Image (cartoon, rainbow, N blue to C red):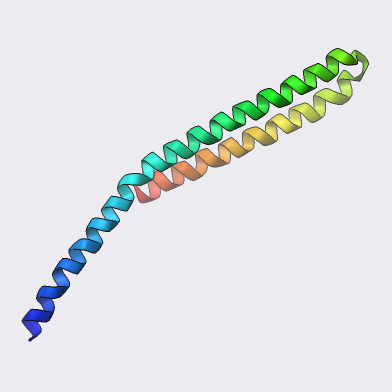
Length: 97
């Protein structure tokens, strides 16, 4: 009876190992897609923010000093989100890959 029990556990362990390796196979692909989406949307939002700031400066050149500083801070915050995405992607690929 013990031999039957051991024989039944071997395929279950093999299936679990296969499922784990299948999971690890998709991590680099998912990290790449996540980083691509993050970088693309970050670039679009930076372009929109820069366009809006330059439009404001074109309408009122005297206010350029008050517009440039918040614009640069906003661009840095948008870029930090893309960098966080890169760090998380690298952590996933290097830790689990």
